[in-house]
Image 1 (tube, helix red, strand yellow):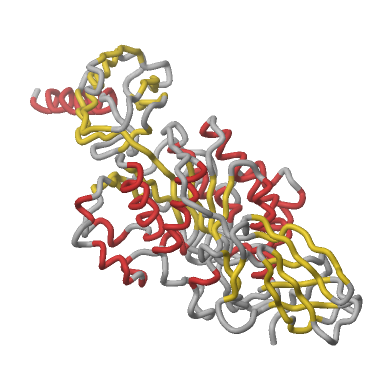
Image 2 (tube, one colour):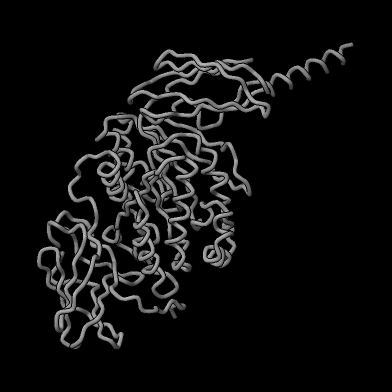
Length: 468
């Protein structure tokens, strides 16, 4: 009889645990919900279970039934930024989420330069410890995982940003969120989903890569690695797909170093990946990304070509790119230590483009067009309305060529937002390149101090063989 009672009790406990309301990890204490938006609340329970949800910001209670797959989902309207609030879920069990805020939520994704934190060697983070608790920032760290198919949960967790939790969190994301919190004066939620070494293919749904011959050919060239996945879709499925029900304001992205050897496909890959994320979130998400820094890669020109591909990706609507070549002091280190200014530049982009706040000239000057005038080439730029400046006695990393495709160091004169380039050895110039190498660091800036983006006026084939 005792054994039979124990059996019944164990069955009851198993049934009860299966019937209990469960929430995805993204719906938890300390979370931030996107303000003034339609937000999804969802989870699992027993099939047909009646669930009551009460949100304290409006004291409304809604009821719904779990479907035959033991899942449930409902839309709620969030107010303007504020909190803390509670959300109560009641069915056969009860869950109370506390310290819930309404504000602005951003996904921060990419590879190791987005992942890099205090412990990885970002010493400036230490300066934040004394005052970080005065900020209203919440951090969600996505657990590294892979999957062949899209998942509906990831065992990440929300944390209050303090001197302890900040140490393990993306420095770029934190500095980005800090500026937004101060300038917008609203709670900020940062979802950090990144994995060092990953090529962009793993963050793109696999079918979109495999059904495109150009992207597929590039993907199969990726070499197996011991520390990160290379299979298309594997990080997207486990580290992005679980959160696409969760409304967000936009995305910041820092990635590209692991795609330098297939740079020719990267523009199309970025366009494909961004479009897939926007479809998943059902909105044209702002997507602001970082151009990779100068670095001593093992093949000629591959870094320059990847940066060129990133510049071309700006043709995708509602995107922005920050240039960081001036933030590098060691081209042998693929992880520049200055993450503070990277976050600041991304934040200025978001404040200007997403939130409509005036941040002055927040875009780096970009090549627009050129004209040949006798033995000179005159170049015009976008986003240089207040003029260009040279930091130093003469321009660096600028080269000019004639029809023979032999490039010589150029003499540079600046006139407003125009660059006049020449070399006495080039009588009939046809092309100019600026900072168009793996490691070149130029010294031409906008008057506001933003570096001129690398460019070339030609489209000649380049040597991408191994550097001997």
